[in-house]
Length: 115
Length: 112
Image (cartoon, each protein chain N blue to C red):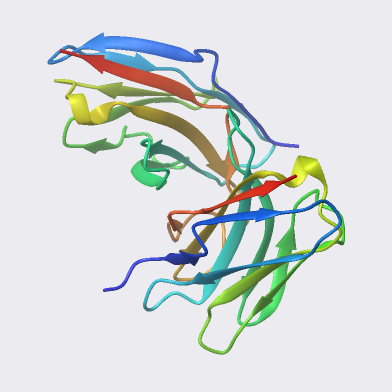
């Protein structure tokens, strides 16, 4: 069984640029959630995708957007990058959405640095 | 609104000893799940243990166990027979909908 994978591992961008991060969900999982983890903090929920539709969103501006594909892999797009967007971006997949009945399994993350 | 509070930013324990990490939370929901995740320096977030709020019995996974006090909204993690590989950030998390709400974490150092 393949676990959650993310690419790239590290990324350096300039303020104002756009970035796309990618996530492949674990086999058998149809739900993908994205989290932002600033240095020294716990992860913050960005949004969740279920069967290619956004299923819930945290307190992040619209310049954070996402996609989920028919194979349940997902992308996180961030436009007009700001210095505060520098963080570890974590992707998590689960068998179904909802309440924690189905555990979320995390990928290794993408470290984004905005200069 | 849901909040998760971890009041111990750093802790240290000697190998083979027992340590308890604290977590308190607040939610207005009746049905929810609580989790402890471990994040070693490799960054991969690993699920340690899970507790369903409707279950009174405390969850146990090998050396890891929880003390779940629903009325007090407390959810502590006990690590028995600590091992060097337990060195990591530990996050308490709450899920009552679709998202995990995390605390700020406790950095645990296991020393020889």
